[in-house]
Image (cartoon, rainbow, N blue to C red):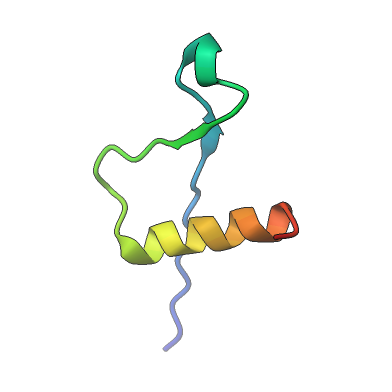
Length: 50
């Protein structure tokens, strides 16, 4: 049996007007682990061509 898990991770600019355009934050509510953060950073690298 093959199982597929769809995970939606959202990130946005954050930390108010002082740092909002220079930083981003990852909303997590305590639900992320190392694997999900690694998937997110991989996706960011792909989108940003890093």
